[in-house]
Image 1: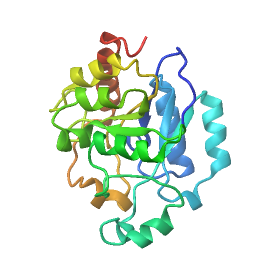
Image 2: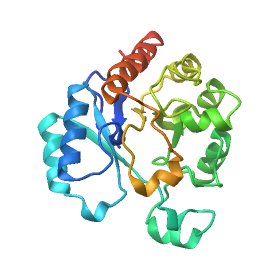
Image 3: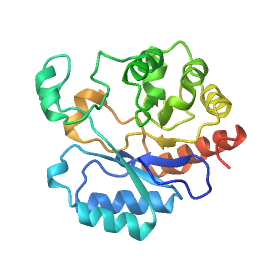
Length: 233
């Protein structure tokens, strides 16, 4: 998980693919410096090739810029869950649910799983891109989870710039306001994509355009909506 935000409210961050598709030393520098310039609290680092990551270099960059981090993982093509569940299990030494899964598609299903797990350190991660496909709306699923919601991907319906497509953002932030949300908020838009998850994300065209405008306009939009609803101070 991320460090606490600088202002005491929910931590606000963004996915690395906004700035770079590969977590090389150069890519890490571009991502972390870009997030710091945008005034974020953390970056979300995809662990697509964690064996080749320079962890000491990454930690030094995060410490230098005063940023926290979270990590996520998409299954590579050969380990897609519907076709190779045994391989996926070997690849994931822990439980990580992503786009490829058929096990959980709704917030209500995630809540039922948490009831069965019944452990205080497990929480739900919602993604507005997937909610736009699977849920009947945004407000009710968020409110139904309440304090069990701990991480939210803020992603537009086409994975482009937030505020330019079909996600009902006022519903999202009204729900977060009503549960007094204090977890992490991560803007997830893909200006750069790693080839390992092209199939999983189904991004076959440029949905962003100008990456600088994505950072400038997308973050400004999300922060504005969050502040309107009292989610960010």
